[in-house]
Image 1 (tube, one colour):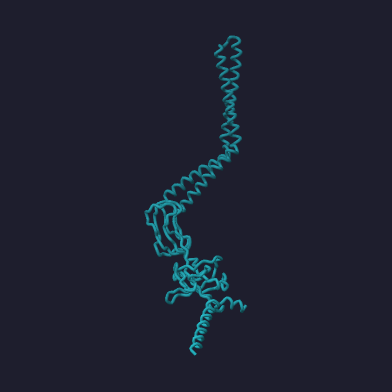
Image 2 (cartoon, rainbow, N blue to C red):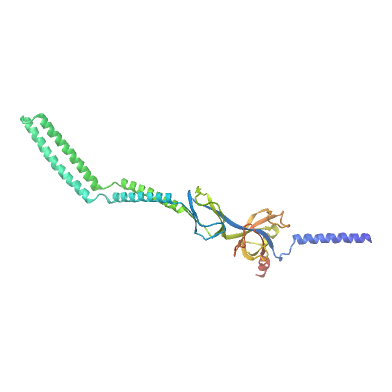
Length: 335
């Protein structure tokens, strides 16, 4: 009799163990799937793209900012001076290019023509005196020195006439195409320098890249900052994600786009809506932050869940519980 009772007990234990194993590894596909994860909010470290003296900070830790709002300013006097100098150079080279393209003024050309006529008359007179001196030299009417002086004066007036004619030709022809191209290149170079100066002037103002909450204020007015020195750390309002993990047997029950409900562990915690946006193609061991006995040492797949209605109740790293709004398999079957 005792032997029969012992056998019955062993059979009962074996049946119970088999039932537990079956329930553990063959869960009802219609049961609600529950996932665990943590809130993931992006943060950005903000600093100036140019060095300088920090003149003013307009926000403090905990303040909310909107995209585009001015958060801090550098002393911009050096950058304003650079921009003004670059603008003056651009104006000067634009005037020079206009002169090259327009050519010389009519008054300058008329003046050059008058000079040519004046020197032509002087050259004709010098040539006549030279010829007369040669004739008189043959009759011993002038000395050889006087004849040489007349010849030198004749050659000088001819050279001055050639110079005046060459100058007139240059004025009438205007500037060479190479001169105009060089003027254009010089202007383009200074315009690029002006654009850089204006960009640096704008970079002396630090603006919020998006809506968010200031987590840290790392500097104070008067500090001398190098390029990229962190001034604020901003927690972005959007997007807010949940980083969760799913066990491999449940991987077939989810897909991107499935609606989920998100709950925090706080008392009377608000329920949030979201949807699965990304499923990692690579398996990994469950992170320590996911405190579930079943998944703690198992291979899981990481999920990114986009929160559709985030608010201040969701904080960076906060543990949350995620449940599917409805069973996907049941929904597919009904369709």
